[in-house]
Length: 375
Image (tube, rainbow, N blue to C red; front, side, top):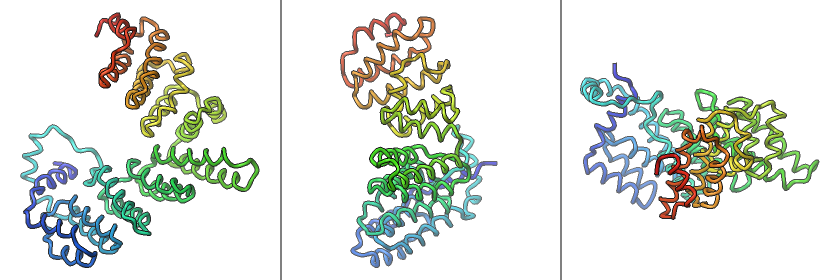
């Protein structure tokens, strides 16, 4: 029996060839002089074969034009079409297509991707309407509840950042909590959580201890940490809090926090710090750990390799070749000779960024790679 996710994916692929009159009708909607005129044009467009992506684009258009109710109506119609009984009618044809495909659909398929939902949310937020943020939240909630999309940090951080830009920490926490409660399983979304904790840390440093402002910020921090622990684990909560200290250059406070929360700096902890750095695109989380030297890292080579590869990726993308060179030289001295082969991809990655930038690869790195037997 072919899975529903595969059927749905193939169904939209099979119906992606839309007659030109329908596409012209959608184009006229976007060019309408008013929302009322656009509504009239939409009612004239035949929806039968219009792709899901085009329908949601139109819904976003109406929401951004302050026609929240009509946009919601289109979303409801889209969800109804997605969950219709038309899929079994093409099941036999798709069964044949499935036999030719080696791809397996992921569990919990959603037709609207995280990147597409992010784009839609940005369009609503940038519309300039007074209630743009509330409209964007309402749209995202509807998309999730109608099972058109799933909650994901890719777009959730956009809503959180919007509030944090105006220093509205409490509102940012409420937004995060709202969408966190919509997920079927407990999950911590790293990027938005890190941003909230960073803003709280920034305010804590500015506020005087025992002042009213400091007490308010402390309450917000306790609230956020409680949400993290309810949806994750003590390790996740502690690492996220500690990562803010690391990113702020307060590495001793970070390791003291690990100790107070009885979290060992072991394999899982280093792996989670690495994941935080990846999700937030923040090398400052890992740099202090690397500066302490390899001797403090847990004795697990695959996790160490991932740690260094992530750090090198950050430096390479930023064009920080001083840091790349420094890290390469340090590792060539700290890693025992009998382990060097297992770290060779770390050195290849350093060389890769030099070549991408059309820069001369340092002679000591070239000589070192030759000793490894590969250049």
